[in-house]
Image (cartoon, rainbow, N blue to C red):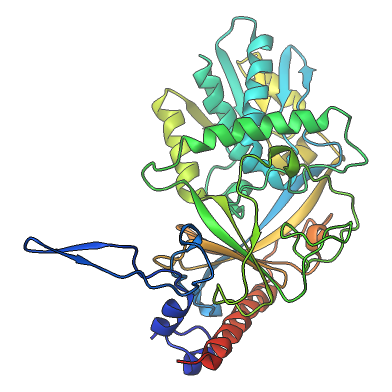
Length: 425
């Protein structure tokens, strides 16, 4: 028996949960006994779903606070006008900026790296020796792109995974998550963002099916007791109605790349094990950051890259580097290094639960964003929606808040258990 919470353990066992949440037990599977074929009859949990919309049984998350193995806090580097990607002269050095991607660092990293690489190679004017500052999501992808363009690359970084801030990311494909304010971006921003998003999406597909599963597609379930509606008041499965209305006018651009990912669909009543009135199902890319960042670093080193541990406190210190071109990927560190007050920290906390075999899905419910990854079960809890953590520089983990989020997950499973108990045998 698997314990979910104190009350859940008495009302529901693991087998009944899996049978209740499984959409399909078998699809004309063939078993061989000598030369005789044995055909299994398909068994549906939700006969009102077509065969192609059935889904794998959902492994319940063991929602216990003592399964937390770490709590991390990340400060996302938000800029109202979007990422900084211009070129600046510091002495005789050309610095190509590549920071300020808000909550979209991993998602836009390859597209941003392509832009930075093009600028760097032009500025290098035939020189193949280029420096990269930072070993996080933006730094590693920029270094890799530069190598592919024929450059000899040295990374200078104070920290590397798992100590970089980007190692504490949720690990979801969110290319327009707090990327800019609609009122502050130039008119060309939408097209520039789309180019970055599409380029990143293309590169991520090359990691599918590789050893360690650094990138994979998983199902996501958005649960709500109230009908999700967009700002125009129309029903919309893309909206999470459990979040407060944002104070800031964050720009939303995912409609420009709607052709890349499946649209969320509202599930028919009774077709899922979830107790909420409204259930939206979608699929999205998951980044198993621990393996993915390690693979990026290994590929960089195998291709002849070098990395030096070094910390810079002012732009003038960059003039001591031997390279004439520097791609600057400091993340939130760019605020102090470049005295860039346009960067606003957006605090985000994650409670990491021990991974569970077969748990490969995500849930959004009452401010909780759960994503079951191979390198840990991410539990990110929020009461403030998109404005949560705005201009908050506190990087101290809040254990009580993390446990409150786990309590939300336990409450969901309690509701699921009660619903299953009411169903006729």
